Image (cartoon, rainbow, N blue to C red; front, side, top):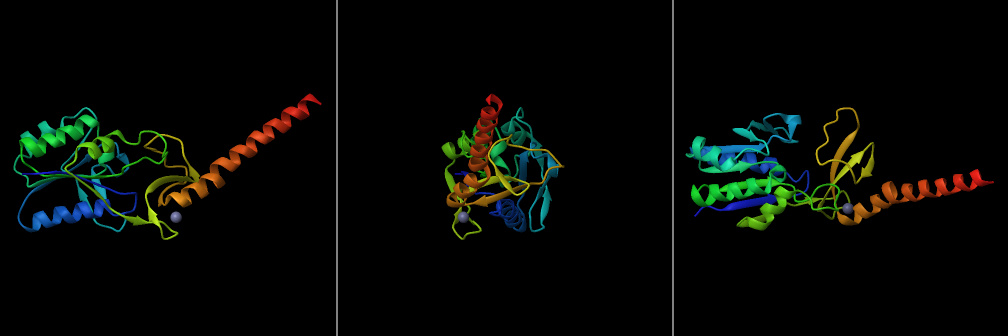
Length: 215
Ligand SMILES: [Zn+2]
């Protein structure tokens, strides 16, 4: 009986690399795989890229309106495994469609992705949330923070400063944006330094300037 896997981890834990390794293992045994990802991740087009070099074309990318079950049923019925990268960007409905691929077509599906978005506060990625709810196997891929502790949080940095608001997907070639995986302890340290302390300072300046205006 095939199973649905969700392998999640913070950025930089080698999710795509592991996906490519699994694809390679199947193909080495002469079996076909179907590699897919959501079309949201536009910067790489239809390719999967890894930070250390290896890359691969996807078999197809899908938008929020595509039915992945139908696509696989009609065009990839003969594959030994479906591998999905950037799974957090799928819709909850599409996660259910992948469960149908597993149960009705008896094809194992391995989804790789982030568990939580960089804002840390709201519901996160709804595709990832659905996968956490329904997958037969949920596995964490671990990575280490600069301080040596386990990194569990995805964070966005703008010009060297932590940011905790903005859209999930940022398509902007001009600003100096980075993503880092860090531990909760470092997160709260940088949150204080880059977000909370500057906000208090700005508030105080506003109060001071209002007082001056009244004199
Ligand atoms: Zn840390």
